[in-house]
Image (cartoon, rainbow over all chains, first blue to last red; front, top):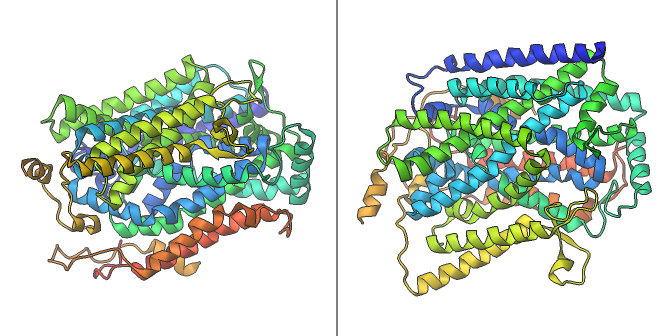
Length: 539
Length: 92
């Protein structure tokens, strides 16, 4: 190991240890009377104000993998990778009015997961189970990908082998177990401070060294002009514009359906906290846009990605850019920003997945009368299992498998939109219609993903999320985002099935929520756990 | 920006009064229509898929989309301020 790499590694380890210590201390932060309830362990007591929520949700949504993969996409394909910016601009005004309803109804009924809501709204444990499983399946590979983010920085520091990842995740698992959501909430402050510091320095310092933005965009255009691929370039072309917009919109619709996003929202203490955050979270989108452009800086700096098993690993371009441009100590800080950036979302995602299991599988199907303490214990244990699973995924399987799964995850989580998203706005849908739509959307989405090859990586299937309309027999070179097409299938089936089921007066579940529940705020009375559900079942 | 930060940072304030019976509440407001703007504009790729005019070396495609962030923040901020409930508490 060179002395340069040694300096980087020492800075990285110091910051990592500091943050881990904070993770354990977090159990004492805003100390609750008891940590043995899901409200405390899994939602931080539903007490976070505007600042904490801003850091928590920011740290939750803008993950290490995003910071590594988005510039890698720009590096490889150009403008098409910039969709991350419109995606994260569109999302907040889009969900503004929906999330406050979710918060209110969850406050009144004590919901912890999106599936809890679906169960009460549609009176269907089965539909809730489908939503919970979809959430868990979509989240697991996302956690695994956070490891890919850490691995990319370690590779750039010349650290290979599996043990560093195992140690990092063991520490993460330990403090998440102990401190619950308070750990990532506290760590998020450090993570975001480091990320903001890193990106401000990067966008001022690197372009200056590379001869300015004009030169950087010029170098990128020169590179794309030389490649045979027609789809790349610093601007979009006629065939991928629709896909760009649909991918941005589809990703925005999917973001707050992920269980870990819901966890961040429900942890806030009132509606105004959420509204303010919808206005303030785009600050992170600005940072993400600048981070995306690191991909072009890497092109201008002549970075060549590291290869593994003969394949170029695009995820290494940003870490290599730092290694190339920054003094070694600051490269260490930047790596730590990415590495710690992986811990916050990984912790929240594992908590969210564990809560889904506990509330919608364990309590529903194994222990109807589970106490609050028992729920918390089960969630804590499952959060450990989830992390072991994520590490095993990365170590035992090809990381590409996790990347494919995450691609699929985005498409399948979108299929919960009619039940969760539209369910918050209307009770028009029939529970069986929603299930039929879910099945149809999932089948259509997986089928389309299977049909997409990727020429660059020589894959015949699951090569991306841009579906060519020519595959359906259209005479067109247009590509569209699979998730949106699948959602369209889902909605059509759900609507038609609902009309039919209503016409034949098929039995429907009873809604345990009331109109006014969707406007409740901090301090409003909560219903006793399950009382309205029982009432509804008796009705 | 200062006023934005001021309301973002406003902490404290009296706790909400214990639930007094309220009239039927709702989220309806004409201001909500403002939210449509930042959802639609960033998706109109044909409007901003251009190289020129450049700003500080950035092609229009890039600086326009970064500018949409300001549009998003402004719209959500206005909607928040105009639809804030008069609960006797200014939030947290």
